[in-house]
Structures are given as structure tokens and as C-alpha cells.
Image (cartoon, rainbow, N blue to C red):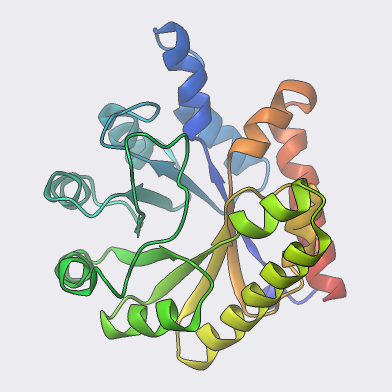
Length: 251
């Protein structure tokens, strides 16, 4: 496979911290998980510093910046507190995500249209600091065009609705949602956006979405941590890396 076409894998280590926090103490350490993920083939590490600190903690972000040899992608809400943390720790990238305290996980994409005036200063200030900014959005033309309007260079398409439809055995809905992702990825490339994707992906869906040639990166976390219980983290990452590479080659 042409290396220039290889799809990057970002491994989200949030739920290693979830397990740690369930009991307290220092283990399992998400920084150790990040280092192992990189050894296993991850191209970068993603960590979501939520406002309620339910998994990743401030110290985890600081330690990740110091300890890992690959880029750190900090997921965060567009708040003044989070902006201050990002500017202080200087991760390679920041992905702005919507956040509700009552949700179990991120439930949808940012409202970039409605939040234009709020989001634009965050994108501007992070970019001035040399931090690559991405927006976690729904796979819609409107959201993509809005991302361009606030000068965000990267978007991450929310794949949750597609994965959820597949999990529920709703083939018609799954086909519809995959069609939205396909059209969105193509439009992102047309308007000059780097396009990533993530949320709810597993071995099968990661392989299938890898067939979209416009995608540059997938971010996968909860599934890999769950599979690590049975396979080990190294083998789980190796298996999803292989699925992505096969999907890209056959795409």
C-alpha cells in the first residue's frame, strides 16, 4: 500500500482512566496505555479532558505531553477553562467537542452553525498558539461549510449514528448514515478540510469506513479498551490497524 494513502490511527485512552478512577489510585495508568498503544502502531493518542473529570485528569494531560513520542489530540469543550489548559500544556492538536454532564459519552456533533460566534475565537486563539484545531461534527454539508467559515482546518465526522444503526440491525438506516458519511468526506476534501472520523467504531466498521479515500485519520477508544480485556491492548490495536489497512487497500 502507498504510505501516503495510509489511514492514521488515533487511540483514545479515556477509558483506561475510567477503570483507574472506578477504584482510585494510580492503576491502570492511561499514560502507560498510551505508550503501549504507540508501540503497537498508533499514530497518535487522543484524550478527552471533560469538565467533570470523570476519566482523564489534568495531571494525565501534562504527563502525556511529556511522555509520549506521537502527537497528542486533546478533546475538550469550548470553555475558557479548557482553553487555558490547552494553551498551558500545548498538545499537538485540540478537537472541540460538545459536552453535557448528563451524557454517558459524546452524543453528537458540535452545533457549528448555531455556535459560530462562540467557537470562532477558540479556533483562532488555539491556531495562533500553533495547535491544530479540529471540530467534531455531524456528517452534513452545512456543518462542514460552517467549519470553513470559522477557519477550522480539520473536522472529525461523528460516526455514531451509523454504528448505532448497524448495532441495532437496521440496514436501511445504516446505509443512509454511511451515505451521509461518504458525501461529507468527499465535500470536506472539496472545500479544503482535512477529514477524520470516529465514535463507536469496531473492527468491522473501521475496516469499512477506511474505504473512504478522503479520510486521513480514525479515532477509536472505548472499543479497543474493551477488547483489550480479552485480547490485550497490543493485539487489539494490531487487529484494528490491520482492518483499517485492508479497508483502505480494497477501497
